[in-house]
Amino acid sequence: MSSTLSTTIIIIILVVTLFFAIKNSIPHFKGQGACCGGGDSEKLVKPKKLDKVIATKTLHIEGMRCNNCRIRVQNKLNGIEGVNAKVNLEKKTATIQLGREIPDDELIRAIGSMGYEAEVL
Image (tube, rainbow, N blue to C red):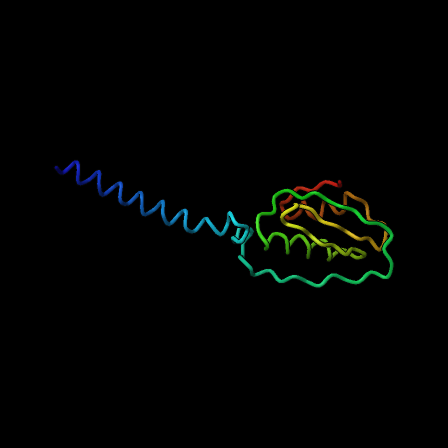
């Protein structure tokens, strides 16, 4: 009888633990979690208006999991002089308008420095 009671208690503890683990993971899987350290703490910086657009590039970005990731990547790209970027989390892309010549590897390095992988499409 003691063995059955111990087994029952262990099963109850595991079920409760699993319940809370799943409950707390659901927002993350919906792209609303704080996977990059801050939940919705990142504020979107308004991109600079370019005097003229000399080129448009599209980057594919791997590793973004939530809106916070999207905002961080977009802010990083828009922090580069001569860049106006919009990042799409669902498509995993960044559409970048350039106001000056910027090598692809500079854009890729900026995103890579944040822990994401990027390539020009």
